[in-house]
Image (cartoon, rainbow, N blue to C red; front, side):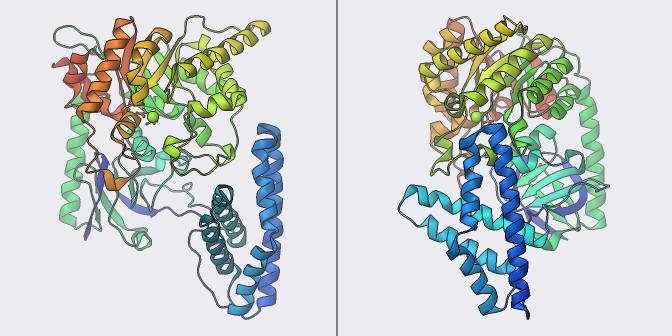
Length: 540
Ligand code: PEP
Ligand code: MG
């Protein structure tokens, strides 16, 4: 038996076998080769196949996203033909009598380091392209695919070095009993997803070699933040009992289903759920959410290889609204960038992506893709109680631009005779100190505020929410944050608007009373927290 400590992201217990998640091309072995000429032919074939793949990607991006977006695949094709790059791979095969995979990995590593150290910003950004190309060749050479989650009969404890939001989104959640990652921070989007799914999860687990644990029986205790590998019979029995206890607690909380969320002195709080997909709405419903306070629409984009079309998005939004009936569904427009990277957006590498080209900044620059989403949203609005929310606002100017684009979209729909709700609310996220500080002006122009405490905290404290080294310093209840929320609440109410909290802090039971005293009207939390929060509120 071996116990590993990590940081808890979501409570709960899971008992299952460990499945190690590997990205294809991540592990490359050095293998001695006798026939280097044959190995070079194998390499050349793989390069041809890689070029074909890039050509296909270029053509599909050209059709769906235009010349600018497609250009990156052309650049990759050109890089693939670079003589120095090819010579280096061939030389390593020849001189060291080694396999092509090893030669590609070493060359890719050398070249990307060389680009990364260049003075010119454009050239520095090519370092990531080299890594991308090398990985693509490696996948072709080895025929490897990312760990296949299909075909698993039982739930597993998924163990990975790290998981990106797009990897997490694409996994079959019905097969995952718990997440454990060696890296990652507690406010990362992967952690948020684990909370949405209400499954135990740990980040920052102190494991040197994850491969050794593949297939082993283990227990994740999300409350204590530990992973117990190959537990003794006694420990296993204890945890089986704990699971039963947790089930009983759930049943107790379930008795609160259908009850109104009203404080003892009669204040109604809207208790909504945060979701990232249609699948998550089932979690929201089974937890008795009174609405959806944050639908992270970017997860629709993250789960795909190409831009979702207007029709695809329309169907998803329509389904979400139909599923929730009369209940409010706040859909946030695409909040891409920072840790939520999508290859086909072809965003340049940035030194500070959290402070860079992200969210509404991308939408207001690439208006075509923003308009596609808005058209889908407005068309869907007749199927339920939709509200639209815009992320990462810092200025009045952005609101003015959004309004211009929205009015163009509405005129286009009017011309086509397409119906849409004339009364749908449009609000903004308060997740930058700038937005909170000018919330008196912003409140006049929008229908509601929703405080994104995850970003508001990182920008107020100047602490990267992704950096696990800062976790101990990351004071999520810092008075500055509470002051900013109070300021936004006062300004919303002074202008007759409502305000909610959809960041993770909204689920902090120690702050529920503070938020209610501030006059917060809505709390939107991961589905697993809804009933716990209702229990807290009705006893206040
Ligand atoms: C937030 O910043 O608090 C928020 C809700 O948005 P996200 O976590 O998706 O950045
Ligand atoms: Mg945010």
